[in-house]
Amino acid sequence: MKLRERLQWSKQRTYLLASPLIALLSLAFSFVYSRDLGPQNRGVLGVIFLANVLFTAIALGGLNLTFRSHQTPIDSNSHGAAFCVLSGVGALSGAIFVFVLSSIYSLFKSQVPSNLLFMAACYALISIALNQSFQILLSINLIGVRWKLDLFAVFLQLVLYFSLDGISAFSTAVNVLLSFIFSYIVNLLITLVFLSTKSSFKISSIKVRVMVRELVSSSRNNFRYAALMGVLDRVDRLIVLVLFPTATFGFYAFTTGLMTSTRFFPESISAMVVAGKFKKVESHVHLSNTFQRILILVGSLLFGIISYKMTIFTFKTAELISITVPILFAFSEILRGAFVTRLSFEIGKYESSLPTKAASLTLILFIALSLITFDTFGLTAVPLVLGISYATTMTIYKILKMPNTTRDKRD
Image (cartoon, rainbow, N blue to C red):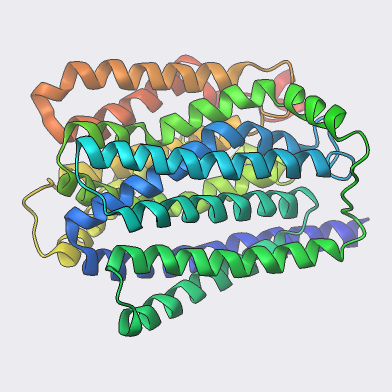
């Protein structure tokens, strides 16, 4: 048993160690194509990415949480067919959603070429399908396969983009989406072939309707939490997208994207916690002592300045964004990491309504305070209010002071 636990820890530790490399390569790719696109076209592409992740988080986030966490009576083997059916419907719906939302944006905000709209729908279909297949890998504890495929996908995207840049007659934005689509198709095929050979995961068509209803019913609470967190994680971009020009949104999406790329760490931990791993991590996420608080402030300052400098270097201008925006966003992002990690320990508890309540309060605070402060602070109000909202919610619900173990509860 001890040997087995050490081997499991090794796979999880490797997954976490590989994540920074994957994030770094993704950042390199983002830097390359953002520089080629410019702020205006980067903003248009950002709309497509935003619509895709919003749909995935809102429509499928709760389903994925339930399937990964093995909440009774959900089991990856018996409910595998139901999960695949719902995922297939989700992928098709997501493609339609991204196409419609991008078309609306093209009509009322900034024109998007018809071929790019078509590519956006294809991108959404394949990326959602791949994401759902990765949920299966996490559910049956194939963490090592997941990070290797992630790394391979980013490497393939870089190769494809530079190859298309020399031979393709399409626009840069289309080339970017083609690079994503082809790399995702390759990874999806590899994943499906791999899963078909695993005896631990066999899809059965028996009683699929019953299993679909059971899976949806068991996901009800998680649907609410995942939808709220999906909106909360992107609501700042939605506000910037609606209230500011496309070029400003392109700047904001790039500079904040540099920082949200570090979400691999809290989200990797959260995903494994939900699946029943890494329970010991809970006792280390407090941010309660003076050293940790100083570290947060210094880290926010450095991370924000680095992101700002990289944004200026990429787009060759600093007219559309203030340095205070990335610094404040970095601060809010650190608070979000603690927020998500701590609440992940409550997701597996049917009786716990804390995740939903905390996400709801944070979202309400952010929207209300944004409306109040927007005229005074402009774009700076968005990350400022986001940090205040996370801090207020964690204070009210004492999220960072929740008991970690049975011994803590007794004390």
